[in-house]
Length: 326
Image (tube, rainbow, N blue to C red; front, side, top):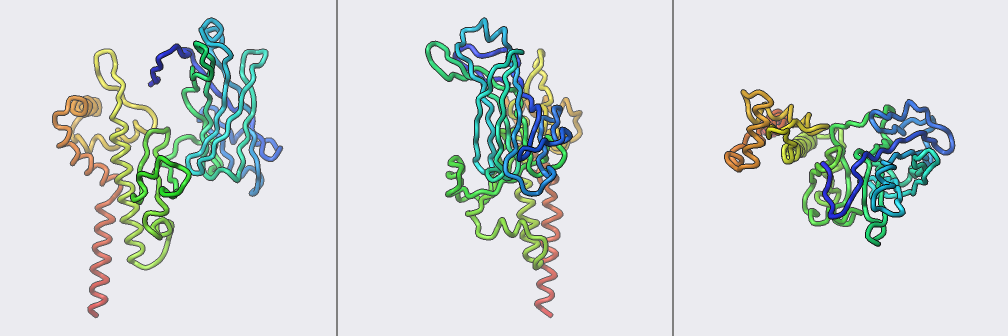
């Protein structure tokens, strides 16, 4: 869905391609770059320790529209960012003779941790005002430092960060929360607050420990998962596109997967298309929406296996009590 602006923007497609990648000057095998997935895999690049990956870029803009439109001095900017480290770098692409825009951008290993996003933004002067946004590539590329195969879709991204004093100011109002779920991007992200509960993140990373530690780890992980499933479901159904007769359409990407998995538990016994229509009616018109939240909670609980984890926790407590009595 395109954002609306109170001035003319580009209607035609804006695209971005990664044409080649080099790591510390050595060319990366192109099997690590997928145009279909729009992903670059930087793990096991041929050396364990490396400093800089250089991504060579080519962008295409609707040149005829750009030439005939009211925009002056267009600028094509590639932007590389990562949520986990708050790293951000930009580079300006230059127009080539063939009409494409080309350039390169560097990813410094020391500034990135997991997965960076590479986007393209087009700005221009309009009505004597410089640097007005007029277009962008519809989909970002991912540059993944943790995978060897360039696959776009992840189940969910986990970011460990200090909400209180970390680099993301928008997290500071949530400084008392041990975690929050953010679902606006291509991949849902769970932010784990490293400063809210001392030792919680370490406990989640643990593999052994006492029965109590294992119980804490499993119950916390299940609660995080339930919160994530609930947030993802609400996001997935919050802005459904409608066809010409008003029938809601299945969303794309991870939103589609979430709807297909959870909707049969939220509205059991319905065909998927009927259930999608029903839940959109309830959400937009209000009737029966609050009553449906119990079913959403139940569906999220099933996905996170919270009943199983709680049962194991209760059994563990009972075993511990019997051991103490003996």
